[in-house]
Image (cartoon, rainbow, N blue to C red):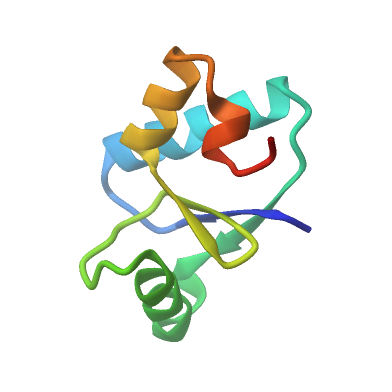
Length: 92
């Protein structure tokens, strides 16, 4: 599967929960298949996400096409607003 969404099921942050839900809703509405990867299952998964994102403090949600970093929620949201989601996700 191409698109991977790193998220967490364990957060007290309403903002993170809302961002994750919005990203999933948009992907679902556009029939873009994606794989969910829960970083709360272990520190090694979180570390892998941060390494691939090139940011040692990255927090979910983060989105990738295979191992290519696409961006975080803000970048995703901007791409949706500009109607450039396919380019952002490196699908075009």
